[in-house]
Image (cartoon, rainbow, N blue to C red; front, side, top):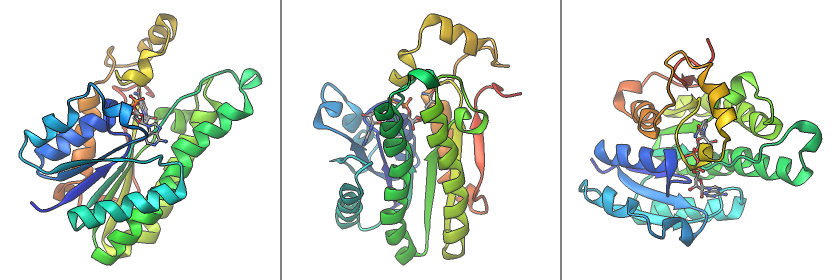
Length: 245
Ligand code: NAD
C-alpha cells in the first residue's frame, strides 16, 4: 500500500486497537507514546509486524510543541510520507468543579487539546505538501454533552470538536480530511479507574446495554482513514451504543 499512519498514545487502549486495525488495512504504522515504559511488557509492535507491515515506535509527549515537530520530522524521514494521523493520546483527571485543582485542569487541557494543535500543525504541514491526508481526532460524548466531574475533560474534548471543524475548513481544499470520533464508555485502562457505581450509572443510559470495545472505535477510525470516506470531512461520529439518545 505504501501509506503510513501515525497514531498518538498508541501503546494501549483505543490507540493500540486503531494501530492494529490500520495495519490490517495495509498502513505502515508509526506508534507513539509518552515513555519507553508504556511499551514494556507489551506486544503491540509484534502484533502489528505480524500483519506484514512496517512498524516503529516514537517516544514523545504530544503536549510539547517542539517534541511534536521532531516527531513529525522523524516519521516523515523514516516512512517517506504521513498519510493518516490519529490524534488519540489523552488523559482524565476527574473531580467535581469545586474540588478540581488548577493543575488537573491545565494538564488535561494541555494533553488532550493542545496536543491536537501541535500534531495537526506539524503533520498538517507534511500533508499539505503531499496534497493528501486523513486526520482523525478522539473527542468524546463528554465534549458533546458535558459530564459531571469532567469540567477539564469535557472542555478539552469540546475544543477538539471545534478544532476538527476549523482544520477541516482550512485543509479541505488541499485534499486533507479532518474528522472526529466521539466514543461513549469504552473498556480501556482509562475507564478501568471508574468505580462500580459510576459504571452502573453510565450503563443505565446506554441503549445497547453494554460498554464498547476499543475495536469498535478502531473500525470507525479505519473507515475515516479509508477511500470510502473520501468526501467526509468536519464530522463528529458518536460511537456510544446510543448513550445520548
Ligand atoms: P488509555 O489511557 O488507555 O490510553 C491513552 C494512551 O495515551 C496511553 O498509552 C498513554 O500513555 C498515552 N498518553 C497519555 N499522555 C500522553 C502524552 N502526553 N503524549 C503521548 N502519549 C500520551 O486511554 P483510552 O481509553 O484508550 O483513550 C484514548 C483516547 O480516546 C483518549 O483521547 C480518550 O480521551 C478518548 N476517549 C476514550 C473513551 C473511553 O471510554 N475509553 C471515551 C471517549 C474518548
